[in-house]
Image (cartoon, rainbow, N blue to C red; front, side, top):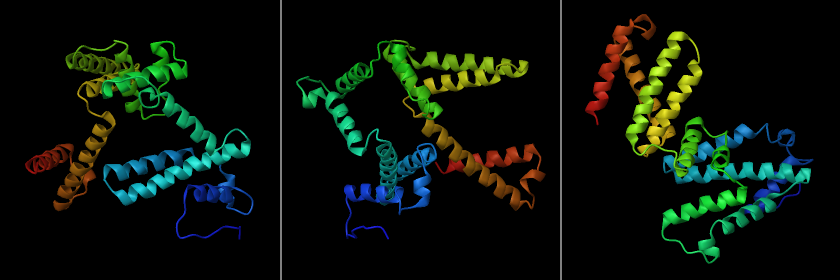
Length: 267
């Protein structure tokens, strides 16, 4: 057994020590075998699970999942510490310096007039910090690892700050119509279908941005609604003594409309 002090309550330093124990001789073989790439997906999943705690307003779940996210941060930092490149204290140092630099209205002498000015200053300071000299640089800085809908939205917001935007939502709606027609034409010709589908999705995200709707959340809600209606269709088919696959599409569509009417009546 490795040397470790058992406590009633552990703190952040203990957490760091446990990760170090697990990753080194005498610890856990699985933990010792991991690298940044092998646990990359774990990192992403833990963040989403923490968001589940936020969305459901489940404090206990949030506390647990934040611990799992922090574990991932400490794990990745421990890998880098072993490589001699940086440790968790270097991570904290850079983060603190970034916060101080981007909040001159708190830690400096710059005055601000409300939240909007804070955000404007933040963007300006971020461009300065990252050495972004053009508007295109700011678009390219958006992480390609973001969910596609969120990445599109963020790129569009940055483009809008450069003045490249429709004056009102009607322009976004017209673009949806245009891209939808181009997708239909591409489908008929069997050419550039993926490209045109992407253009249509990008246009829909633009409309969502104008309407101040999170496209990722909107799509998730639509998916949840589809599952709920699908369940009613399946139950309706079972009530008739048939498997869904045995019923014609017209019957399934009728059951779908019934499910939709039931849903609307409960709203």
